[in-house]
Length: 304
View (tube, helix red, strand yellow):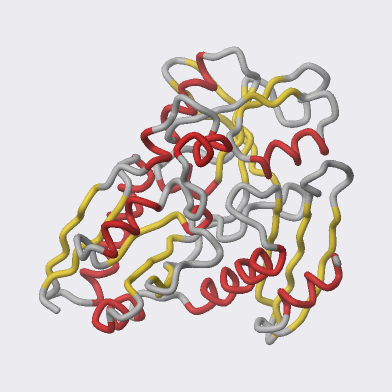
């Protein structure tokens, strides 16, 4: 293959992930020509409604709202590889697509960015997020906190946190790092100083696949599969495969309030999860250790 077309969303973070991909491809295949194709997805376009409502409003029932248009372009041959924030990619893909590889994972923690500290959050504090998982954990860990819907890319959300009426927001540490923002202490946004605190993943559980960049291809595309295989990071692959398998067993989607973390421990993998019932109530929580190909089933059975 002389040319590889990669598809990406147009947000600042997505473009940074495309740059990371292009750098990795250039290092592995110096003669390969890479073309970047920017695609606007349903989730990017519909910022006027809550993220949890976008699929319902648009009638998008079977695909993640941040990947539908990328998959259409992939199926039509307009791109060869779709570059995703892996946490946005549905657990089960249609038969004509395949998750072919992942870059080395960034830190998986969520970060609280606010006008007050995480410790000072309490009754009446307002925190912005579009994630059901983050919202449930906020309410659970910080009784009395109010959650408001927050849409937009990372710079937009930070600006809203600095200028708005909310006391803070929750973002992924990986995205902040990739865009060059401070992840500890404080950061200044348009003259406003905000505190930043990363939350331990065993206390505030991240999303499955969080911090990983994933590559989706057409299932029959052997050339693209071989190229992406050269970029794949094995430990990251083992971890995200187990996390995604756990979500599959739960029949959970991108917006289901489930948090999960994993780590390689010698020949085994440790994995823990916090799962919130769809009907409300106390979450279930468990932690197990097993072989990488067995840990998801063991964790699922522990919670069943």
